[in-house]
Amino acid sequence: MGVRPSERDREDVEGAVRAFFEAGKNKDLPALADLHGPRETFTKFDENPPYTRQDSDDAFMHEQAAFANISDYHYDIEDLRVDLFGDVAVATFYLSYDGMVVNDYSFEGSTVSGKARVTMVLSRTNQGWRISHEHFSRYPELSPHGKKG
Picture (tube, rainbow, N blue to C red):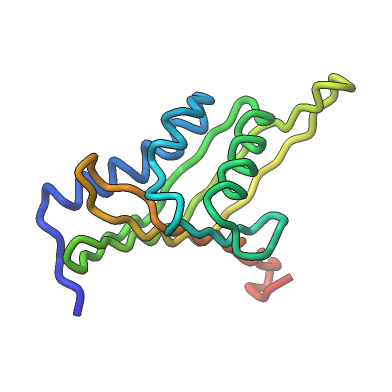
């Protein structure tokens, strides 16, 4: 059964979650990689292709490409909840984001935006909290009548 984390644990987990998106926004790829847990135990499901389970190498390659090709990236983490299970934390939240994806070959760009439901599983390590699993799923668009579009 999960327990409410101590204030310090909650702040540390929230800090790791926010650091992940800040590293991407600032294109700090070494910091982005450092926030992941051990390669042999990391997994990810994403809202973007490929829709299969990604291991550490695949996930980092796709994250690196996504953050490298987006400019004017803005994000907002909403309703962040942290639950603690010993040395494992589960962070759930809504992520709103927008930016400009640039094609360096054609010097053209297109705007992207969206909202996703996110679950991150983090493990306490000697280096602090590290992400062991990420799961992103697109938040359904609602029609003006409140129904899925």
